[in-house]
Structures are given as structure tokens and as C-alpha cells.
Amino acid sequence: MLDEKTKQTVKETIPFLEAKGTEITSLFYKNMLAAHPELLNIFNENNQKKRITAKSTR
Image (cartoon, rainbow, N blue to C red; front, side):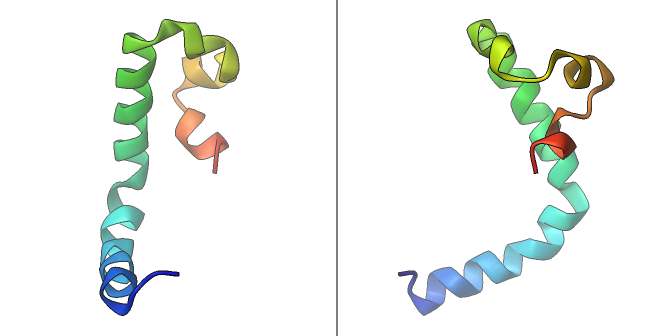
């Protein structure tokens, strides 16, 4: 179970994640897959090409 301070921190990040979530996840996937191309087979290649992987994994 999360303590109250942690819950509050999570709640405070929601507006930022709503505004920047796609940007963050796009960069995450780009960096992760560049460093670990062996993971490409786990992700939808068509979505990768269209840059919609971040939205499709929600």
C-alpha cells in the first residue's frame, strides 16, 4: 500500500503526464528500442513506423 505522501506525489504528476505523456513514452520507446533492438519483435512494427506505439500500449 502507498503512503499518503506517495499518493499525493502521484496525484500531483497527473497534469504533467496528461500534457507530456505521449512525448515521454515516444522518447522512451525510441531510446529503449535503439539500445535493445531485440525487443522490436515484442512491439507492433506497423505502429512503430507510424509512431503510435505509446498510444497503442495504453
